[in-house]
Amino acid sequence: MKTLLNGIAGRRASRAGASATFTVLLLAALPLVAADPPTITGTGYLVGVPVPGILCTNAAGQVSLKGNVHAVRVQADDPRATGRLQASMDMAYQADGTGLFGGAAQQEVGTWDVTDPANPKFTPTGGVWDMIYRGVAQADGSDVITLTGYGVGGGIDGLRLEQTMTKGPGVPFDPAIPYQGTGTIKPAPVTTTAVIDSFDDSSPPSWGRGAGAGTIDLIQANGELTIRGDWPGIPTVDQGQTTAWASPDRAWAVNQG
View 1: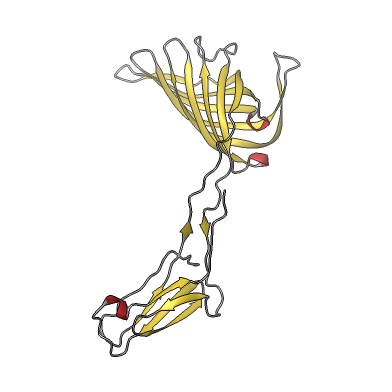
View 2 (view 1 turned 120 degrees about the horizontal axis):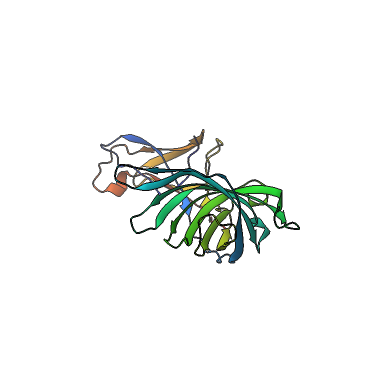
């Protein structure tokens, strides 16, 4: 296993003449600052409910909708957020007439041909957003929904998508009532670590070293750095006298952004 570097390590000898072996780990990370991504706006239209789901009531009179699946045509001002969304949903109705719902959703990226509005045709262009969502349905049928997920494949692979959607009052799953949404697409996470030394080769590492009043050797092999310290006849009156350490003797940095 390779080890990364994360500081200066040492061990105090327990008695005169003792030697110690250390593995030094160094890991460096710097905070990154990125500009806020632009806001995306879009509209969703229900195009089908292939699985209506099952309504069930428990002994306490609580009503749930289980296993519903519905599909939505999403058209946005960013082609990466335009596509065909399919969501599976479980909903629990509350005593005040509202409903709490959530589930998994996948949105395939693509384009829509609405020459025949009654029969829109979808053409995939590559990639799918894999998301989870949750929402609240009001007693009047209006909804507020949040979706978060990441891209798989195509030009969205690894990207992050966050969306908020609202639907006006009306009958649930009414194709005449659109969903209005806003969201952002964020870049894939960037590497925020810098490997200072992987200790893969057997040559002496380019590291500064110290051993208090004694002497040390640095040995790197098989992804490990070993420090061997020797303090013959030196009592540990002060910890620094019988401590060995190593640190990189060159500059390093994590790239901005």
